[in-house]
Amino acid sequence: MRTKPFYILLALLVAASMLLTACGGAAPTEAPAVEEPAAEEPAAEEPVAAEKVQIRWFIGLGTGSLPEHLEGQEAVVERFNSTHDNIELIMDIVTNEEAPDQLKTQIAAGNPPDIIGPVGWSGTNEFAGLFLDLAPYLGDFDWSDFDAESIDAYRMEGEGLLGLPFAVFPSMLYYDRDLFDEAGLAYPPHKYGEAYADGDPWTVEKMEELAMILTVDVNGNDANSPEFDPENIAQFGYHTQWTDPRGQAAALFGADNVVDENGDAYLSELWREAFRWYYAGFHEKYFMPAAPYQESDLLAAGNPGDSGNVAITHCHLWYTCCNTNVPNWDMAAVPAYNEAGDVTVKLHADTFRVLESTEHPAEAVEVMVWLTDDGAADLLQIYGGMPGRISQQDAFFVGMDEKFPQGVDWQVAIDGLAFPDVPNHESNLPNYAKAYDRIGAFQSLYEADPTLDIDAEMDTLVADLQVIFDEVK
Image 1 (cartoon, helix red, strand yellow):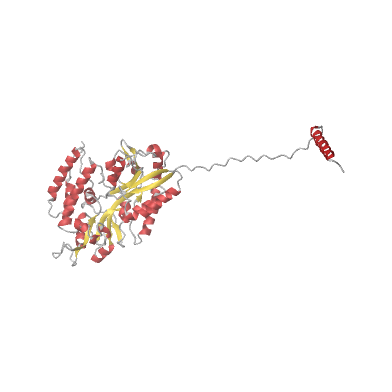
Image 2 (cartoon, rainbow, N blue to C red):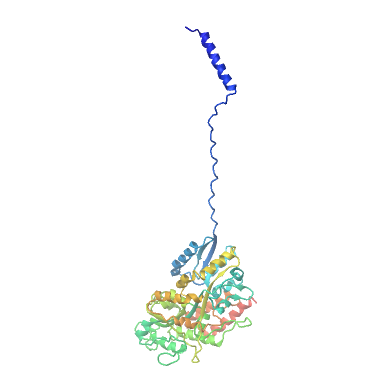
């Protein structure tokens, strides 16, 4: 039996041996290598989408604010936004009546829109001097798709190029075939210079003759009959729709203005004759609806031509937007003022304008060019305007035929472009806003007041306009 000291000695010898082995010349056994964790690759950064520039499109100074325009315009804006990574187009729609004051308010508050339109001269007159010259932003723009004259119309002395041709709206007669058929009357001529079916020259006088027959009271008496009741008219022969006195006068009696080359107010004998004719038509011969009738349910509460109770309505091509309840209408030539054949076709020409105050002029011009090119086909079907681009005109009328399958002689509109009113009935005036309001007040009087002395009222108009013009001399 071994004793405890023996085990102690043995343990000491083993420990010493292990120590000598560790310190000796024999190569030590290597411990397995420990792998360092692989360095993580930095996560790839997601590309940051560039923030879109917002361009606000103010609609309402001209066309575009009617309920029937909204859906189509929204589709055009959606198409633009889906095809542009750099710009977001936003609509700001205001009624035509409120648009001038709304735009003034936005400008005064330092929050103006970038683009306005489509709008003609009348809508922009009181904002003259606030629009951007487009030329520096157009670069090598291709002008070959436009008539040179249509481009020049937007070049303003001292301001530059303010717009591109977009929509042209000649005026014409819209007539209801059914009402003519019912009265046993031949339709008005479609070609300028052509006589009426009975051989008489197509003049204002001849049109009035037809309008008297086509004006009928509730008992079936026409306006020529001694039994005719002007208090209970069921159908009217003629109406010049949705225009001011300058437009009414130019529509049938020729181009002129209420300011002369010296900046003074005047009223030519030609336009005095026009206002006498309108006054008599409203209040003495009754073939035109006076103001109370115009706003009545009989005449579609302010849209007489679409009521089915007016045989002939004078308006522009854009009126196709609002002539939807008369299924069998067509177009005819505007009559000559006299037997000499003097014809005037009052003309609207709408475009878009970029405000000079925009913070993003390049992008705003990009939007405006798109609206007059890629976006134009859809917009012009909405507004009913002939394209300013030559290449788009044939397709435009094909689309119009699809909308109005009764068959419309669109050549009437095309031919009317040869007889524009120069100066235009929407030309600028000194102290424009006040002058425009005073002319509108004159219209309210002669359309509503059957006791008016129309000649005295015309003299008062000229005197009042002179005061208004003198304020800005």
